[in-house]
Length: 460
Image (cartoon, rainbow, N blue to C red; front, side, top):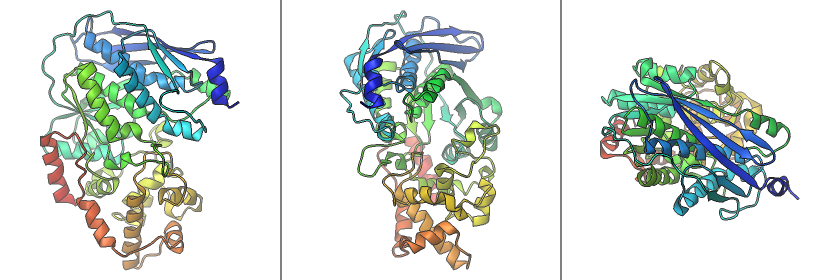
Protein backbone atom coordinates (compact mmCIF):
# COMPACT_ATOMS: atom_id res chain seq x y z
CA UNK A 1 0.00 0.00 0.00
CA UNK A 2 1.39 3.42 -0.98
CA UNK A 3 1.67 6.30 1.49
CA UNK A 4 -1.09 8.05 -0.47
CA UNK A 5 -3.48 5.14 0.03
CA UNK A 6 -2.44 4.56 3.65
CA UNK A 7 -2.85 8.20 4.71
CA UNK A 8 -6.23 8.48 2.98
CA UNK A 9 -7.42 5.44 4.90
CA UNK A 10 -6.04 6.62 8.25
CA UNK A 11 -7.16 10.26 7.87
CA UNK A 12 -10.31 10.24 5.72
CA UNK A 13 -11.52 13.75 6.57
CA UNK A 14 -10.02 17.21 6.22
CA UNK A 15 -12.10 20.04 7.68
CA UNK A 16 -12.24 23.72 6.78
CA UNK A 17 -13.58 24.63 10.21
CA UNK A 18 -13.79 28.41 10.17
CA UNK A 19 -12.47 31.80 9.19
CA UNK A 20 -12.66 34.85 11.43
CA UNK A 21 -12.49 38.46 10.23
CA UNK A 22 -11.34 41.19 12.60
CA UNK A 23 -10.32 44.74 11.83
CA UNK A 24 -8.49 47.70 13.25
CA UNK A 25 -8.18 51.23 11.88
CA UNK A 26 -5.22 50.14 9.75
CA UNK A 27 -5.89 46.53 8.74
CA UNK A 28 -8.27 43.65 8.18
CA UNK A 29 -7.10 40.35 9.64
CA UNK A 30 -8.38 36.91 8.68
CA UNK A 31 -7.68 33.83 10.81
CA UNK A 32 -8.35 30.35 9.42
CA UNK A 33 -8.85 27.02 11.15
CA UNK A 34 -8.21 23.77 9.28
CA UNK A 35 -8.02 20.24 10.67
CA UNK A 36 -6.85 16.83 9.56
CA UNK A 37 -9.10 14.80 11.83
CA UNK A 38 -7.07 12.68 14.21
CA UNK A 39 -3.75 14.21 13.24
CA UNK A 40 -3.31 18.00 13.21
CA UNK A 41 -4.85 21.47 13.46
CA UNK A 42 -3.64 24.41 11.35
CA UNK A 43 -4.17 28.12 12.00
CA UNK A 44 -2.78 30.21 9.13
CA UNK A 45 -3.67 33.89 8.95
CA UNK A 46 -3.52 37.00 6.78
CA UNK A 47 -3.38 40.74 7.42
CA UNK A 48 -4.42 43.27 4.76
CA UNK A 49 -3.80 47.03 5.01
CA UNK A 50 -6.92 49.12 4.47
CA UNK A 51 -7.70 52.82 3.99
CA UNK A 52 -8.59 54.85 7.07
CA UNK A 53 -12.34 54.81 7.72
CA UNK A 54 -13.03 51.76 5.54
CA UNK A 55 -14.92 48.91 7.21
CA UNK A 56 -15.93 45.40 6.14
CA UNK A 57 -18.35 44.92 9.02
CA UNK A 58 -21.55 43.31 7.79
CA UNK A 59 -20.25 43.12 4.20
CA UNK A 60 -21.33 39.89 2.47
CA UNK A 61 -18.98 40.49 -0.46
CA UNK A 62 -15.97 40.62 1.83
CA UNK A 63 -17.17 37.47 3.62
CA UNK A 64 -17.20 35.68 0.28
CA UNK A 65 -13.69 36.96 -0.47
CA UNK A 66 -12.32 35.89 2.91
CA UNK A 67 -13.93 32.47 2.64
CA UNK A 68 -12.59 31.96 -0.90
CA UNK A 69 -9.03 32.79 0.13
CA UNK A 70 -9.37 30.03 2.72
CA UNK A 71 -10.44 27.61 -0.02
CA UNK A 72 -7.26 28.49 -1.92
CA UNK A 73 -5.13 28.13 1.24
CA UNK A 74 -6.46 24.82 2.52
CA UNK A 75 -5.03 22.66 -0.25
CA UNK A 76 -1.48 23.27 1.05
CA UNK A 77 -2.45 21.55 4.30
CA UNK A 78 -4.77 18.92 2.80
CA UNK A 79 -1.98 17.52 0.63
CA UNK A 80 -0.13 16.11 3.68
CA UNK A 81 -2.56 13.16 3.74
CA UNK A 82 -4.89 13.78 0.76
CA UNK A 83 -8.05 13.00 2.74
CA UNK A 84 -10.83 11.73 0.43
CA UNK A 85 -13.34 14.11 2.05
CA UNK A 86 -12.92 17.88 2.37
CA UNK A 87 -15.65 19.03 4.77
CA UNK A 88 -16.36 22.77 4.57
CA UNK A 89 -18.07 23.90 7.78
CA UNK A 90 -18.22 27.63 6.91
CA UNK A 91 -19.23 29.66 3.88
CA UNK A 92 -21.40 28.45 1.03
CA UNK A 93 -20.70 26.37 -2.06
CA UNK A 94 -23.14 25.21 -4.71
CA UNK A 95 -22.44 22.18 -6.90
CA UNK A 96 -20.88 24.27 -9.68
CA UNK A 97 -18.49 25.90 -7.20
CA UNK A 98 -17.46 22.52 -5.86
CA UNK A 99 -16.55 21.43 -9.38
CA UNK A 100 -14.67 24.70 -9.91
CA UNK A 101 -12.53 24.18 -6.83
CA UNK A 102 -11.92 20.52 -7.64
CA UNK A 103 -10.65 21.49 -11.09
CA UNK A 104 -8.26 24.10 -9.65
CA UNK A 105 -6.95 21.74 -7.00
CA UNK A 106 -6.59 18.71 -9.27
CA UNK A 107 -4.73 20.43 -12.10
CA UNK A 108 -2.88 22.75 -9.71
CA UNK A 109 -1.62 19.63 -7.93
CA UNK A 110 -0.57 17.91 -11.15
CA UNK A 111 3.13 18.19 -10.32
CA UNK A 112 2.49 17.03 -6.73
CA UNK A 113 0.70 13.90 -7.98
CA UNK A 114 3.38 13.24 -10.62
CA UNK A 115 6.38 13.62 -8.32
CA UNK A 116 4.79 11.52 -5.57
CA UNK A 117 3.73 8.78 -8.00
CA UNK A 118 0.05 9.25 -7.20
CA UNK A 119 -2.41 7.78 -9.70
CA UNK A 120 -5.77 9.48 -9.24
CA UNK A 121 -8.40 11.37 -11.22
CA UNK A 122 -10.46 14.53 -10.91
CA UNK A 123 -13.56 12.66 -9.78
CA UNK A 124 -12.07 10.52 -7.01
CA UNK A 125 -9.13 12.50 -5.56
CA UNK A 126 -11.45 14.38 -3.17
CA UNK A 127 -15.13 14.93 -2.42
CA UNK A 128 -16.27 18.32 -1.12
CA UNK A 129 -19.11 18.57 1.36
CA UNK A 130 -20.41 21.92 2.61
CA UNK A 131 -22.60 22.57 5.64
CA UNK A 132 -21.75 26.18 6.39
CA UNK A 133 -23.22 29.56 5.59
CA UNK A 134 -22.59 33.31 5.73
CA UNK A 135 -23.80 35.41 8.65
CA UNK A 136 -24.10 38.55 6.52
CA UNK A 137 -27.03 38.85 4.14
CA UNK A 138 -26.20 41.70 1.75
CA UNK A 139 -23.16 43.24 0.03
CA UNK A 140 -22.13 46.70 1.22
CA UNK A 141 -22.70 49.65 -1.10
CA UNK A 142 -19.32 50.65 -2.53
CA UNK A 143 -18.30 53.27 -5.11
CA UNK A 144 -17.34 52.03 -8.56
CA UNK A 145 -13.76 50.73 -8.47
CA UNK A 146 -11.08 52.54 -10.48
CA UNK A 147 -7.34 52.32 -11.05
CA UNK A 148 -4.87 49.43 -11.34
CA UNK A 149 -3.34 47.01 -8.87
CA UNK A 150 -0.20 45.44 -10.38
CA UNK A 151 1.00 42.28 -8.67
CA UNK A 152 4.78 42.44 -8.12
CA UNK A 153 7.02 39.46 -7.46
CA UNK A 154 10.40 41.11 -8.04
CA UNK A 155 11.09 39.39 -11.37
CA UNK A 156 11.50 40.65 -14.93
CA UNK A 157 7.87 40.07 -15.96
CA UNK A 158 6.20 42.24 -13.35
CA UNK A 159 8.95 44.86 -13.76
CA UNK A 160 8.20 45.04 -17.49
CA UNK A 161 4.46 45.36 -16.84
CA UNK A 162 4.92 48.11 -14.27
CA UNK A 163 7.42 50.03 -16.40
CA UNK A 164 5.23 49.82 -19.50
CA UNK A 165 2.06 50.96 -17.75
CA UNK A 166 3.58 53.77 -15.70
CA UNK A 167 5.56 55.12 -18.68
CA UNK A 168 2.27 55.27 -20.59
CA UNK A 169 0.62 57.35 -17.89
CA UNK A 170 -1.41 54.59 -16.22
CA UNK A 171 -1.78 55.20 -12.49
CA UNK A 172 -0.73 52.06 -10.67
CA UNK A 173 -0.50 50.72 -7.19
CA UNK A 174 1.46 47.56 -6.52
CA UNK A 175 0.57 44.41 -4.59
CA UNK A 176 2.88 41.94 -2.91
CA UNK A 177 2.62 39.13 -0.38
CA UNK A 178 5.22 39.59 2.37
CA UNK A 179 7.54 42.45 1.47
CA UNK A 180 10.92 41.66 -0.11
CA UNK A 181 13.83 43.89 -1.06
CA UNK A 182 13.53 43.27 -4.82
CA UNK A 183 9.81 44.11 -4.75
CA UNK A 184 10.43 47.46 -3.07
CA UNK A 185 13.28 48.25 -5.47
CA UNK A 186 11.14 47.36 -8.49
CA UNK A 187 8.47 49.85 -7.44
CA UNK A 188 11.04 52.55 -6.70
CA UNK A 189 12.87 51.94 -9.99
CA UNK A 190 9.56 52.42 -11.81
CA UNK A 191 9.39 55.89 -10.25
CA UNK A 192 6.73 55.08 -7.66
CA UNK A 193 6.82 56.04 -4.02
CA UNK A 194 7.03 53.16 -1.54
CA UNK A 195 3.53 54.14 -0.36
CA UNK A 196 2.22 52.87 -3.72
CA UNK A 197 3.09 49.34 -2.60
CA UNK A 198 0.37 47.48 -0.70
CA UNK A 199 1.75 44.46 1.13
CA UNK A 200 -0.38 41.71 2.62
CA UNK A 201 1.15 39.62 5.39
CA UNK A 202 0.67 35.88 5.02
CA UNK A 203 1.39 33.78 8.10
CA UNK A 204 1.89 30.16 7.08
CA UNK A 205 1.33 27.53 9.80
CA UNK A 206 4.77 25.99 10.23
CA UNK A 207 3.39 22.87 11.93
CA UNK A 208 2.89 21.52 8.40
CA UNK A 209 6.67 21.54 8.00
CA UNK A 210 6.93 19.25 11.02
CA UNK A 211 4.53 16.81 9.36
CA UNK A 212 6.68 16.89 6.22
CA UNK A 213 9.75 16.04 8.31
CA UNK A 214 7.88 12.99 9.60
CA UNK A 215 7.34 11.74 6.06
CA UNK A 216 3.86 13.01 5.28
CA UNK A 217 3.23 13.99 1.67
CA UNK A 218 4.69 17.23 0.35
CA UNK A 219 4.98 19.04 -2.96
CA UNK A 220 3.95 21.89 -5.22
CA UNK A 221 0.57 23.60 -4.85
CA UNK A 222 -1.15 26.25 -7.06
CA UNK A 223 0.26 29.29 -5.23
CA UNK A 224 -0.80 31.74 -7.93
CA UNK A 225 -4.43 31.04 -7.02
CA UNK A 226 -3.59 32.38 -3.55
CA UNK A 227 -2.13 35.46 -5.24
CA UNK A 228 -5.35 35.84 -7.22
CA UNK A 229 -7.75 35.70 -4.27
CA UNK A 230 -5.55 37.78 -1.96
CA UNK A 231 -5.10 40.41 -4.69
CA UNK A 232 -8.88 40.44 -5.10
CA UNK A 233 -9.23 41.26 -1.40
CA UNK A 234 -6.62 44.01 -1.67
CA UNK A 235 -8.22 45.57 -4.74
CA UNK A 236 -11.63 45.48 -3.01
CA UNK A 237 -10.34 47.17 0.13
CA UNK A 238 -8.66 49.94 -1.87
CA UNK A 239 -11.34 50.47 -4.51
CA UNK A 240 -9.20 49.38 -7.47
CA UNK A 241 -10.78 48.17 -10.70
CA UNK A 242 -8.06 46.17 -12.47
CA UNK A 243 -5.86 43.42 -11.06
CA UNK A 244 -2.95 43.28 -13.51
CA UNK A 245 -0.79 40.16 -13.59
CA UNK A 246 2.29 39.42 -15.68
CA UNK A 247 1.75 35.79 -16.72
CA UNK A 248 2.79 35.00 -20.28
CA UNK A 249 1.63 32.63 -23.03
CA UNK A 250 4.55 30.29 -22.26
CA UNK A 251 2.93 29.42 -18.91
CA UNK A 252 0.36 27.35 -20.82
CA UNK A 253 2.91 24.69 -21.82
CA UNK A 254 2.91 21.36 -19.96
CA UNK A 255 5.96 20.67 -17.78
CA UNK A 256 5.90 16.92 -18.51
CA UNK A 257 6.10 15.96 -22.17
CA UNK A 258 2.89 14.36 -23.39
CA UNK A 259 0.98 14.92 -20.15
CA UNK A 260 -1.23 17.65 -18.70
CA UNK A 261 1.14 18.26 -15.78
CA UNK A 262 1.83 21.99 -15.62
CA UNK A 263 3.89 23.48 -12.80
CA UNK A 264 2.40 26.83 -13.79
CA UNK A 265 -1.27 25.76 -14.02
CA UNK A 266 -2.51 28.61 -11.84
CA UNK A 267 -0.55 31.00 -14.11
CA UNK A 268 -2.13 29.54 -17.24
CA UNK A 269 -4.77 31.22 -19.37
CA UNK A 270 -7.16 28.41 -18.48
CA UNK A 271 -7.05 29.36 -14.80
CA UNK A 272 -7.14 33.08 -15.63
CA UNK A 273 -10.31 32.50 -17.68
CA UNK A 274 -11.85 30.32 -14.95
CA UNK A 275 -11.05 32.84 -12.22
CA UNK A 276 -12.52 35.64 -14.31
CA UNK A 277 -15.77 33.68 -14.58
CA UNK A 278 -15.82 32.74 -10.89
CA UNK A 279 -15.33 36.36 -9.86
CA UNK A 280 -18.21 37.55 -11.99
CA UNK A 281 -20.65 34.90 -10.82
CA UNK A 282 -19.79 34.35 -7.16
CA UNK A 283 -17.70 37.27 -5.84
CA UNK A 284 -19.32 40.07 -7.84
CA UNK A 285 -16.92 42.84 -6.86
CA UNK A 286 -16.73 44.50 -10.27
CA UNK A 287 -12.96 43.92 -10.26
CA UNK A 288 -11.39 42.84 -13.57
CA UNK A 289 -8.57 40.27 -13.34
CA UNK A 290 -6.22 39.80 -16.31
CA UNK A 291 -2.61 39.25 -17.31
CA UNK A 292 -1.03 42.13 -19.25
CA UNK A 293 1.70 39.94 -20.76
CA UNK A 294 -0.54 36.98 -21.70
CA UNK A 295 -0.15 37.61 -25.48
CA UNK A 296 3.66 37.35 -25.22
CA UNK A 297 6.21 34.57 -24.82
CA UNK A 298 9.08 34.56 -22.33
CA UNK A 299 11.42 35.24 -25.26
CA UNK A 300 9.58 38.43 -26.20
CA UNK A 301 9.40 39.53 -22.58
CA UNK A 302 13.15 39.02 -22.10
CA UNK A 303 13.96 41.06 -25.20
CA UNK A 304 11.66 43.89 -24.12
CA UNK A 305 12.85 43.77 -20.52
CA UNK A 306 16.57 44.21 -21.25
CA UNK A 307 15.84 47.51 -22.98
CA UNK A 308 15.07 48.85 -19.49
CA UNK A 309 18.55 48.31 -18.08
CA UNK A 310 17.79 50.16 -14.86
CA UNK A 311 16.06 46.99 -13.61
CA UNK A 312 18.99 44.63 -14.24
CA UNK A 313 20.63 45.26 -10.83
CA UNK A 314 17.37 44.94 -8.87
CA UNK A 315 15.21 42.19 -10.37
CA UNK A 316 15.09 38.75 -8.73
CA UNK A 317 13.02 35.65 -9.43
CA UNK A 318 14.88 32.84 -7.66
CA UNK A 319 12.64 30.89 -5.30
CA UNK A 320 15.56 29.74 -3.17
CA UNK A 321 17.08 33.21 -3.09
CA UNK A 322 13.79 34.77 -2.01
CA UNK A 323 14.07 32.98 1.33
CA UNK A 324 17.02 35.10 2.44
CA UNK A 325 17.13 38.83 3.10
CA UNK A 326 17.93 40.71 0.98
CA UNK A 327 16.78 38.28 -1.71
CA UNK A 328 19.44 37.02 -4.12
CA UNK A 329 20.06 34.84 -7.15
CA UNK A 330 21.25 31.51 -5.75
CA UNK A 331 22.93 30.73 -9.10
CA UNK A 332 22.43 27.00 -8.58
CA UNK A 333 18.77 26.28 -9.45
CA UNK A 334 16.98 25.73 -12.77
CA UNK A 335 15.08 29.01 -12.44
CA UNK A 336 18.33 31.00 -12.26
CA UNK A 337 19.69 29.06 -15.23
CA UNK A 338 16.52 29.61 -17.26
CA UNK A 339 16.56 33.37 -16.71
CA UNK A 340 20.23 33.45 -17.71
CA UNK A 341 19.49 31.49 -20.90
CA UNK A 342 16.46 33.53 -21.95
CA UNK A 343 18.47 36.75 -21.51
CA UNK A 344 21.60 35.39 -23.21
CA UNK A 345 20.85 36.60 -26.77
CA UNK A 346 20.48 40.16 -25.54
CA UNK A 347 23.35 40.53 -23.05
CA UNK A 348 27.05 39.68 -23.03
CA UNK A 349 28.39 36.76 -21.01
CA UNK A 350 30.06 39.23 -18.64
CA UNK A 351 26.77 41.07 -18.11
CA UNK A 352 25.04 37.79 -17.25
CA UNK A 353 27.76 36.93 -14.74
CA UNK A 354 27.40 40.37 -13.15
CA UNK A 355 23.63 39.92 -12.75
CA UNK A 356 23.70 36.45 -11.21
CA UNK A 357 26.95 36.69 -9.32
CA UNK A 358 28.40 33.57 -10.94
CA UNK A 359 29.11 32.10 -14.36
CA UNK A 360 26.37 29.49 -14.63
CA UNK A 361 26.97 28.85 -18.32
CA UNK A 362 30.43 27.41 -17.46
CA UNK A 363 29.14 25.39 -14.50
CA UNK A 364 29.21 21.65 -15.30
CA UNK A 365 26.88 20.98 -12.37
CA UNK A 366 24.11 22.79 -14.29
CA UNK A 367 24.11 20.32 -17.19
CA UNK A 368 21.14 18.27 -15.96
CA UNK A 369 18.96 21.35 -15.57
CA UNK A 370 20.22 22.60 -18.94
CA UNK A 371 19.15 19.40 -20.70
CA UNK A 372 15.73 19.59 -19.07
CA UNK A 373 15.28 23.16 -20.28
CA UNK A 374 16.19 22.33 -23.90
CA UNK A 375 13.88 19.31 -24.09
CA UNK A 376 16.46 16.53 -23.72
CA UNK A 377 14.68 15.03 -20.72
CA UNK A 378 11.34 13.51 -19.75
CA UNK A 379 10.19 16.82 -18.31
CA UNK A 380 11.14 20.45 -17.91
CA UNK A 381 12.32 21.61 -14.49
CA UNK A 382 9.46 21.96 -12.03
CA UNK A 383 9.84 25.72 -11.98
CA UNK A 384 8.20 28.71 -13.65
CA UNK A 385 10.21 28.55 -16.86
CA UNK A 386 9.50 29.21 -20.53
CA UNK A 387 8.80 26.81 -23.36
CA UNK A 388 11.39 24.41 -24.74
CA UNK A 389 11.27 26.01 -28.19
CA UNK A 390 12.02 29.52 -26.96
CA UNK A 391 14.89 28.31 -24.76
CA UNK A 392 16.43 26.62 -27.80
CA UNK A 393 15.93 29.76 -29.86
CA UNK A 394 17.61 31.88 -27.18
CA UNK A 395 20.60 29.58 -26.93
CA UNK A 396 21.02 29.37 -30.70
CA UNK A 397 20.91 33.16 -31.06
CA UNK A 398 23.40 33.58 -28.22
CA UNK A 399 25.78 31.06 -29.82
CA UNK A 400 25.57 32.83 -33.17
CA UNK A 401 26.15 36.23 -31.57
CA UNK A 402 29.19 34.93 -29.69
CA UNK A 403 30.73 33.23 -32.71
CA UNK A 404 30.27 36.32 -34.85
CA UNK A 405 32.16 38.33 -32.23
CA UNK A 406 34.86 35.67 -31.92
CA UNK A 407 33.98 34.96 -28.28
CA UNK A 408 34.76 31.63 -26.65
CA UNK A 409 31.59 29.65 -26.02
CA UNK A 410 30.85 28.66 -22.41
CA UNK A 411 30.73 24.98 -21.44
CA UNK A 412 26.94 24.55 -21.69
CA UNK A 413 26.84 26.07 -25.17
CA UNK A 414 29.74 23.88 -26.36
CA UNK A 415 27.82 20.89 -25.00
CA UNK A 416 24.74 22.07 -26.86
CA UNK A 417 26.66 22.14 -30.14
CA UNK A 418 28.35 18.78 -29.52
CA UNK A 419 24.93 17.12 -29.15
CA UNK A 420 23.87 18.43 -32.55
CA UNK A 421 21.25 20.76 -31.09
CA UNK A 422 22.55 23.99 -32.65
CA UNK A 423 20.84 24.44 -35.99
CA UNK A 424 21.38 27.96 -37.36
CA UNK A 425 19.15 27.25 -40.36
CA UNK A 426 15.95 29.32 -40.29
CA UNK A 427 17.18 31.11 -37.16
CA UNK A 428 16.31 34.58 -38.44
CA UNK A 429 12.88 33.38 -39.52
CA UNK A 430 12.20 31.83 -36.11
CA UNK A 431 13.41 34.97 -34.36
CA UNK A 432 11.11 37.15 -36.45
CA UNK A 433 8.16 34.83 -35.86
CA UNK A 434 8.64 34.91 -32.09
CA UNK A 435 9.13 38.67 -31.95
CA UNK A 436 5.95 39.32 -33.92
CA UNK A 437 3.71 36.70 -32.27
CA UNK A 438 0.69 37.90 -30.32
CA UNK A 439 -1.47 35.28 -28.64
CA UNK A 440 -5.08 36.36 -29.06
CA UNK A 441 -6.18 34.05 -26.24
CA UNK A 442 -6.15 36.78 -23.62
CA UNK A 443 -8.43 38.99 -21.52
CA UNK A 444 -6.73 42.35 -22.10
CA UNK A 445 -9.12 45.33 -22.18
CA UNK A 446 -8.65 47.30 -25.40
CA UNK A 447 -6.83 50.20 -23.74
CA UNK A 448 -4.20 47.84 -22.35
CA UNK A 449 -3.93 45.89 -25.60
CA UNK A 450 -3.17 49.14 -27.43
CA UNK A 451 -0.40 50.00 -24.94
CA UNK A 452 1.17 46.55 -25.27
CA UNK A 453 1.05 46.51 -29.07
CA UNK A 454 2.67 49.96 -29.20
CA UNK A 455 5.49 48.83 -26.88
CA UNK A 456 6.02 45.67 -28.91
CA UNK A 457 6.39 47.70 -32.09
CA UNK A 458 8.82 50.07 -30.38
CA UNK A 459 11.01 47.46 -28.69
CA UNK A 460 10.82 44.37 -30.89
